[in-house]
Image (cartoon, rainbow, N blue to C red; front, side):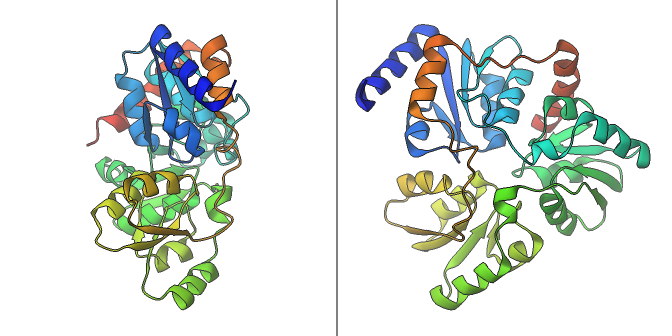
Length: 303
């Protein structure tokens, strides 16, 4: 089956089975193009909660498909590549979080969406990189436990200096690899070009950037900007959406290390097989869904 035939089959099956295909901005171009909706973690969470589809094919990594199942427990959620994981999400589990809570009792836990369902179930409220600052500001406590991304947590701490943010020492292995020296090299060779980075980058990189935001916020910034050239400091998959929406603008990747191999595992054929055979279904214990849903729904209520 060639690509055109496969796309036609996916479209036929999608309609026949009342399925929706969601894809993260970091997926490969062919997968983004076949999706009903492409976005960041917050936008995809909202779509998963709102959809009236019977089947959700989630083109992303494991924690994202879990979040979709938590928000739509009556839907069949399929992850095209079951071992597409997130190393940062694996840097904390529910047992470790319970010990963290014992060490710092009676302090609310803000849980980055890049975590397992069991960790979300032990947390007070979730956040994404799009709304993390708003989530932290919404809490009454002047102390916050933030898990698991120390880089995003450090960024939040600078935006909300009136609160003490106690960090877990996790990180995104893709964004964490970017060095401040790479920013300096870009400044030296590309002049005043705008550098846009994700808050999962380390604090030295964030400090030297012109704009810091989630993937959707970076896309929005570019769409509204009169500038014609940009350096992008997040996973390379975002370049596809940026170029589609801004064909007259030029984009350069800040670092060659900005490739998430887990996000690149999903192929068009994987999407087709998942939809055709309804394989790799995400299942979560009902008690975990109930507890984790509270933290996700609290996040979604924050505008």
